[in-house]
Image 1 (cartoon, rainbow, N blue to C red):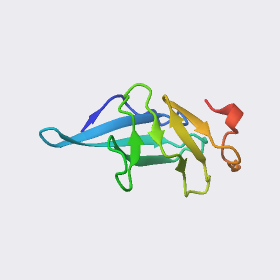
Image 2: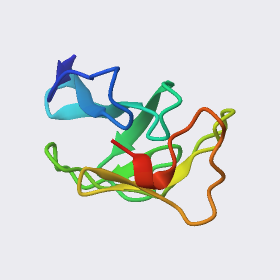
Image 3: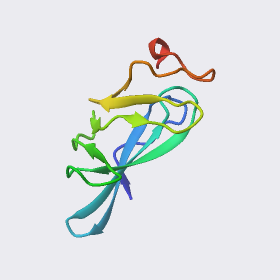
Image 4: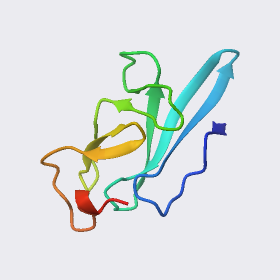
Length: 108
């Protein structure tokens, strides 16, 4: 397994793209991340470079400042909802802020 960088568990919203070469020219991509809300949960998203691959988020291929689509709506107690654009997490309007979360203006 290869990674672009190491995940920093102390930073809300930190992410790392990783991949596994399953055959010559065939890679499986994914992203580990710390929830951007500040709750501290670690999560994983399967990524794809090909549009419309079921159960995967579309990734633009940028390792330094990735954009993924669609938005991410976490089904955890924090209920964080937002998107990653050019390497930066953005909160979707109307996302509730749980007691253990940072407010959108207090993101690190």
